[in-house]
Image (cartoon, rainbow, N blue to C red; front, side):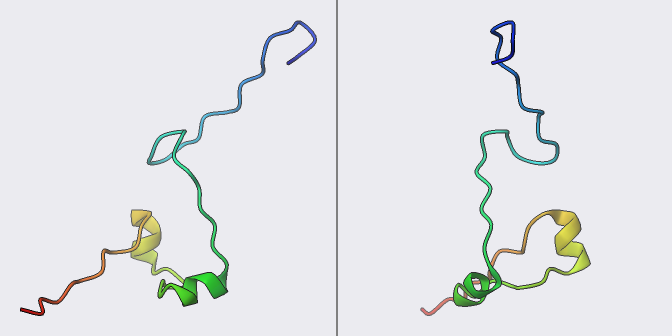
Length: 59
């Protein structure tokens, strides 16, 4: 609260998602452990996400 008793508001986040979406930060070791890429391609970086893994059918 400020001196007048009103609550200060945090600035809104820009970009995709909602303000309430969680932000998860993983270390390089965690990325490797879960099979995620350590570095993103320029396309992935601009898309803001990594591609979904392809699933092979085992039937």
